[in-house]
Image 1 (tube, rainbow, N blue to C red):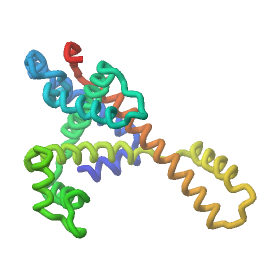
Image 2 (cartoon, rainbow, N blue to C red; image 1 turned 60 degrees about the vertical axis):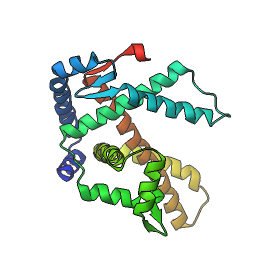
Image 3 (cartoon, rainbow, N blue to C red; image 1 turned 45 degrees about the vertical axis):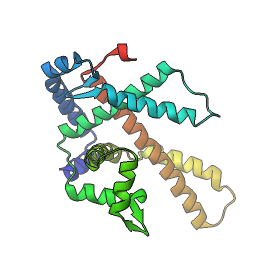
Length: 236
């Protein structure tokens, strides 16, 4: 299915609008009484469609941000309120992408999960995956293998949705003109055709990466605008 969506969205960019509508409807239906009931629970900080952000999850995210800035003395740390807002926004956005993956039926198979784990550098020894290292590192971080793999599977599902969105971003004729203008300024006086081509390719790639990032941000904003999101401000 992911291949069909990727090919369709590349040929027909308006397909993403239809996907957004499907996701919005899914959120609306998914929220229902479930969202209302979970929002009343004392350990729920936010409800995002059928997903919820629990208090412990929010505290972990906040503490990670706090630790990050404490270890960056040269960088001015935001105040507590701003850190809390950053933490909850990050968690809400994560739930939005997961709900989008649900709406598009994007799953992660066991072989995909296994390959992702085995390719991680921190779990390798002498260039290959080492089960003992895997379990030892998880134990040191007080994370069970089941919990780690659950989180990694969610990360992979999010990556699939984001990959679909990024694949739609392409350079249009106006962008190509911009590439030519920028390249002309950087290649003035050069005669080496290969070097000129490298510079053109580098500029084109930089612009494409920028457009892909803009596509992600725009899609995420559209998700937030079309989704049922409730945040309990008393935790912030």
